[in-house]
Length: 407
Image (cartoon, rainbow, N blue to C red):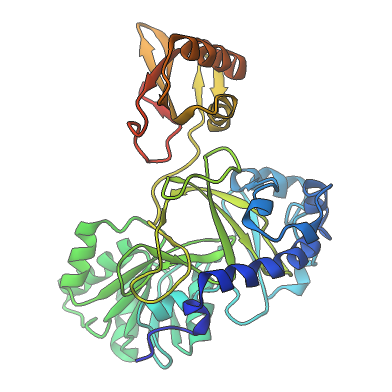
């Protein structure tokens, strides 16, 4: 059995970077034909954005901003130059956020993820993601069909009807949430229905803890995880190596300090930012609000693209202290003002009946004067007073948290 989807997956990382960044200026020019990108990227020369350092100078677009932007300028917030009628399908997600599907083959880039999970041409796949208005069902449907699979468009629910389809078509593959896969297997066992044809699965959209992984495996199903969004499709996926997730081709992923556009140090936890290279509907530095960390080196499966640990929580740590919002980008700003500091964590607690803040800051050069300077910066940036605790380098957890609300 062929181990990889195509030769792109095993090329040298330097060759991949060179190819992606040679295409990026053209994608930026295409993006800037849309009014919202033209405004956000005003003053930037697309031809100069040919490296990760240059890309990091562009502003991030936060996914949390999209509902308000889309509502103000329907349907796509001014970020898509093409008319709705030029796309194949048109969706909405809660917010609302409006998402178009391109007309090209495998528009959501999911065939690679299915291939890595063992799906092959001629397989029958039971797809239980929802087909109603949101893109989830169609993401996996179009990806499986691009791979040459036949798809049962089941959607979630109606287990009795699904049993009939499974017994008739004998699907070898399942795509859907891990939760619904367990529901389906439990219901089949209770009803005495035969779902034994399902041997592999690609799951997404919900947590897949080790306990559930073990249960699914014990039932004879080899299940793999994928990470994606309704905006970008499949972003990263698990492979046979079971060692992190490999980032999809045709995407540039950055991991940045939450609330900023600044890349983290290698191996540090940060927020996922993705740039896609579809000139018809590009995303430029879309900050997803999800945390992860990069793994070193290529995957043992032979795929050479960047690897991540998977989903590690949410990056939006904004909280209110004494009635005022405190944001991760403010904590990051304090770090920029004091280069001698390492990781920072603002801990919010209650002292008596009053909110209190303590900024924990890593440094190898602790002094009373530095503590006083940082306290002054904390007040200037947040407009709130707080204590400063200087701690040794490497003592704060590498979990991407810049604000810990412990009230």
